Image (cartoon, rainbow, N blue to C red):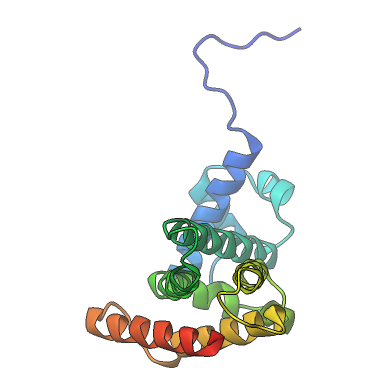
Length: 198
């Protein structure tokens, strides 16, 4: 039976190694592009073997899919946090907080968003009609309708419509870090969202 050498560091947990691989891959993909980044560069940057990479991912495309999932979950977490800051019965406040947090999430991570949603292979178009962001928005719209804040016959339709409209206007212009353009965009989003539900 082999005993561990005292003081020798333990192997990182699998989830931590996976996160390290994703962080390095994200950085390299943004710097060099997906096609010009090798799996060997990712594993060297993360300090793991190629075998360890293949325990977590089957390919670079698999890493991109994991980065997409993480991007959307992080965006949803930020949205939920902002909506949670609103008064319980302020449905207009909750809805505009949802829309503005979603827009800011995309703007603050524009390069990463472009990478994970434009890199090969592209995601299916289903993501524009069925994803956790739309599900969350649909739940908010349905709850507001039940409380008679709005009168929406089809919250699911409205959620898809609103999500895609928001996505389109955020991607329409290169706003970057221009605070005046961001302020104007958020004001327009707020006004448009409230007009939609009224």
